[in-house]
Image (cartoon, rainbow, N blue to C red; front, side):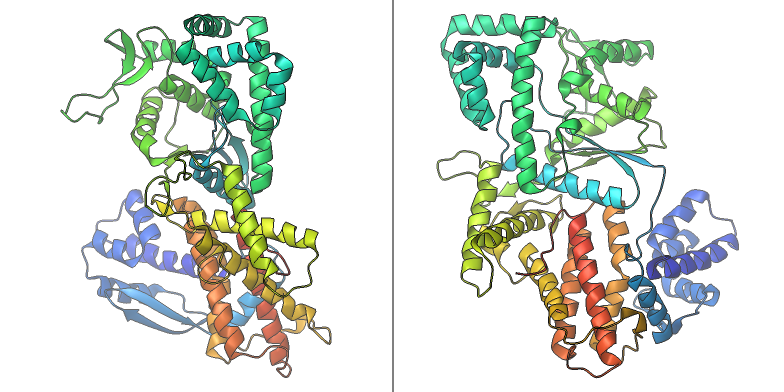
Length: 571
């Protein structure tokens, strides 16, 4: 179906185009995209007109079918009041649409790079935001019709693997695998590091092992693969616990690009972009300077002829464009890496590897903080492990459920507690502007009131309980949306805004736009439910209100699923 949002937006854009096409001089294509995206204010600025006068001119060209009233408000906003007949038609269409008005695109490919833990290290709270934000974007892109190729760019190469392989040999394969298979990766890594720092003979063996690994020695590669496989199995357990869609097949680590790095260097050299600086081979992309105003280099090959992150990331860009045929490439990586990615993208474009037609963006995010507004740590000062964090949230949720009166068995309660814990942890992250830091507060996050994941889950369960209490069947096909009560109309308008919320979250790569919409919808439902009796209402009002409840429950369930959050029917 064509959503209400699309219908009205299409009409507005048609009115904008009519004004622009009659402008003197005629506006450029780039101007057209500006006002189509930003509305009356942008159009007024482009034409050098007063915004209110521009809004009035837009009205003279606007198709007002389905509009009961319209006014120019403030500096030039258009407030449209829709007719009940138009709203009824749109809501009736929603009842038959499992996608609730969200359209699909076909033939587009999005490569999303997210999570990226390190082999032989446990996942910690520092991986939370990349994993949760990336997975939400992947779910939204898939729902929108994209072919999504997830890339889990794990750290599985480099000098630390010399000491890790030697430590594996010292322990013996069986003991090492036994330790790694239970997820005790940190102890394994710390043991290797301690020997490397204190034992010169071990250090020399480790360095020799790195050379063997990088030169392709078969036995060394076999041992390296053990470390990778056991780590990837552990990552899969963490993703399953979080209900994240990443799989072992999505793991494409640094090692994958190793054989491409020489070509990266030679092709940059052939393009005349490489410059030797201090023995290293660098590219100096335009527009990047240090604090002293000197050109800033992107180091492609170090003075010792080793390769750094820049070479690997350039190889990844080439692979994602040339071999995966990406239309969009997203890097869900922390904000401190912003300049690095800007420089990588600039060099890739200068080399011709990243055409202008491909959207390539660094999806930056802030930090997870403790109550002291510092980086979240345990009481002993260690980094908080992701599984431990989820386990604590699950226990808190289980304790809260035990205090509530319900008919759940022990197993059912624990299953529901895990669903609530996931919702609490994910929603706290996804309801925050991703570029900002946020404080991790489990007491607030687990609460069934306020702007929390459990509150939205409870709103959905509350809606479903209405239908469990039905004494006689109802037929949604007979619903007519008269919307006599203001609370009914307010809820209806919220329901029709779902496609706009999804599109807005994708256009800006900001999942909190969808989260905010869902919270607003739940509040609209609460207002409606308090003002408008449902089961005790007489017909046809009863069926109309049941239909509004059905649409609200479906919208909450679908919206939460796009964020990676389950919507239980009972809580």
